[in-house]
Image (cartoon, rainbow, N blue to C red; front, side, top):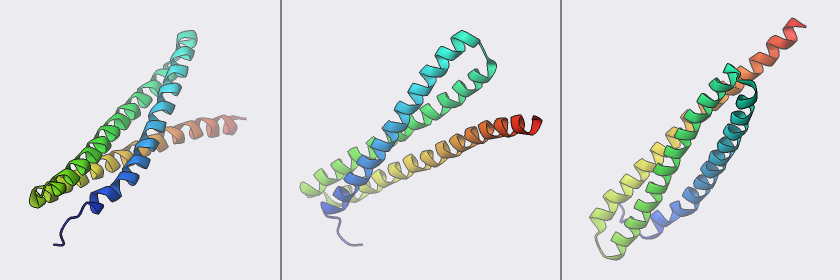
Length: 135
């Protein structure tokens, strides 16, 4: 195995930062939609709105865990750099490996969240298709 240098974990900084920006944008979008649906529900008391809010709550929780694992990955990358700096190469390798595992978990949660989002959109599309078929 080649020696781990300071540049290797530093390469992940920009990638993780961009991922975190995307996660934060998703989180804010879901929060806005939930607030909007909440206001509509208070007016109409429609059960379909409750299902949508429940779905969004699940997606919001997944996004929160995506953020937690992503931030943890970044934290362990910084710790890796510190360990390399102080000469603890072997420990740095294991910590960096752990950082990569956390990033993998974060990305796997993103895949799951995208699947749920796609399914929710398919339900909306099928509702519209049913409406046009009745006409």
